[in-house]
Length: 112
Image 1 (cartoon, rainbow, N blue to C red):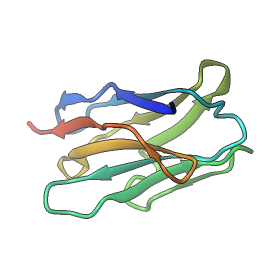
Image 2: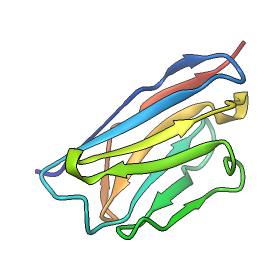
Image 3: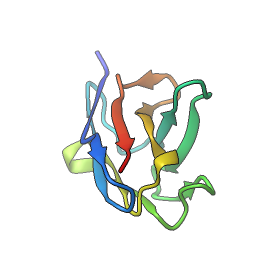
């Protein structure tokens, strides 16, 4: 019943930007923390950023100062604005909700 659908990934040059979206249905998002994770080939899935129900935000050191997580509770949507992208940001980006729900992911490729 709970569905998370990521979108906004694609191919971008180093230094470029992308905005990812995660649309949630089947549950209100407002009381809950939401997170973005990513996974590169051969790597473990890693936490990128988290925003709590009270809008407290934390970022991984690798993206701090470049990425911005936000939410629009009225639109039931989580966002990740990614600036100054680097090749090491390449991977599949996943939305995570209520400690157990995942989207299918959206591919981000940073390459010249």
